[in-house]
Amino acid sequence: MKLSKLNIKKINLKDVDKNYTAQDILLKLGELYQFESGIYGYGNIWTKLERNVENIIIDELDKADCIHVEWPKLQPRSIWDQSDRWNTYTKENDIMFTLDNNLGEYGLAPTAEECATIFGSNRLLSYKQLPTTYYQISEKFRKEKRARGFLFRPRTFVMMDAYSFDKNEEDMHKSFNKMHDVYLNIFKRIGINIIPVVSDGGTMGGRVSEEFQAITKLGEDIILYDEEKNIGMNKEVLEFEDKETFIKAFGSDINNLKEYNSVELGNNFELGTKYSESMKLYYQDENGESKPFYMGCYGLGLGRIIATSIENNIVTKNNQVKGFSIPLSIAPYKLQIIYKENQKEKAFDLYERIKEMGIDCIIDDRENFSIGNKINDTYVLGTPYFTVIGDKFDNENIEIEETITGNKELVKIEDINNYFIKKRG
Image (cartoon, rainbow, N blue to C red; front, side, top):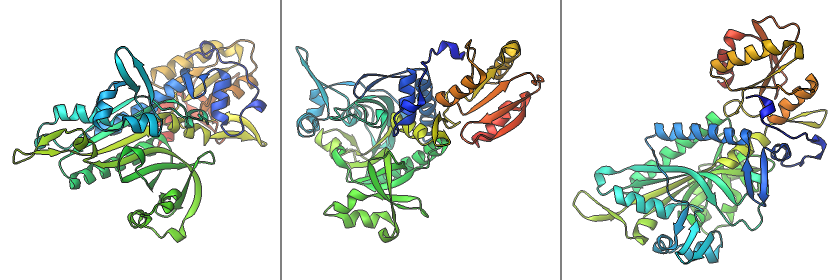
């Protein structure tokens, strides 16, 4: 990518939000655009970031034999009436955006249990076809009364939602546990230290549920965390009447836990037969009898994952914000190439060689910018590594600097791919 094509704005880092620094930098650059509170458009950096996170999620889910599908974002009221959740989502909790016109009443999907149950029952007619898990990655809509924190709590957001279908409770537990392991693999590859947390099922209808929380000073949740076991409990659980049920499932002494602010990046629920029974959708068991599906639902918020990743990697110098550094595993561009004007041709030759290796990189081809300004913009764009091509460039080696640590390393050009493979671990 030629940086001149991004058309980023000039910003003053002294004016950025002190809490949501990285996202505000992207907003001021023009890489995020707020059309209205909680409704955003995404530039090249965020869009490629999202694709990279999405690809990791798809890869891990596909390896676990989950099936990638897509359901409508515009959903008719009739399917929500089948589950008796229309009033819950439109009146009691007032979560769903609705449309009422001469075609009928519709809702913009905040979630997809109804679609998933209908879709699954149409295909999964026999116990021989179970277990099966379907998933989609799509935009969701929720009527947040007070959108805040940029992509931490917006009104539209991209979400992975999956739904498992099993023939009995025991198999439902197996699917639930399998997705637990899938999530741990996903977050490990993304580079987030994730904490499985005992929680409440909320409006999804599940009583057994598990949150996946990341510690951050920006988090609105408070978790009780066992550092040794890397497990936690949402503090709100202690307010439940049946809190002993949750504490028993926790598997740790709550007296030895520490409190942390955290943000929920994923949530899994065991739904049981709630939806299949309420919607009267069944499969045939071994004896030819109609039986309800035991279901689970699983969600990951891509916007929150990205926001957490960049906000937890702010780069400062002398207590002043320089920018942020996107984790290499999801960075849209791994390396930023900066050059002295008299080395332009050699820099572009290097740029082409690195692209041929399959490494996404940026070359800062903007004119009338000093080397210092270009280095500063590496941090502003979140690029994790940069190199400066100056008069000492020998066409064989480049010095690569890591933005999060400031560490420098001389690397042979032919070894650049291996260098990044090692850095990814």
